[in-house]
Length: 185
Image (cartoon, rainbow, N blue to C red; front, side, top):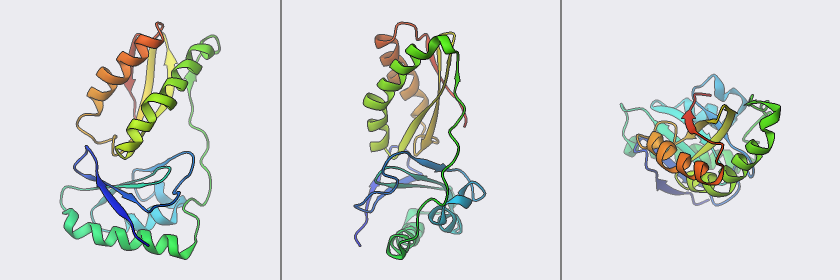
């Protein structure tokens, strides 16, 4: 099995491309070993010293390292774990998580549908290309709340991306949008 790697805008995160579906649809973001209990792959990756975050995308795995380890030390270990996971045939996720809570007023459902459509068609593909995801968390009083995952969560430019890229686009297409806020989980 050949696995490609790609750099991401976040220097602490590498994107691993196994050449096959990882999640297919949806994503899974594991920020610590406890959160990774439902994924044998993420759990095994967290056993490696220096692994700080694991993100499973449609066709990639993004691994974020801590500052105290170099990619030259960690990358071969991560590659071996990913190969072992796919060769074993074990499922990547043992159970589906519950859908995240969205703070939306019923009267705003039409606006929220427009926002989600724009996020799905224009933003998420670009963010996935950088090893991450953007998740809608709510809309109230003109403020869109979004959560950054994977490589984007710790990326120094993620706030600029939200404010200058995503916010401007949403405000252009959905006049009711006043601003965009980044939220944690």
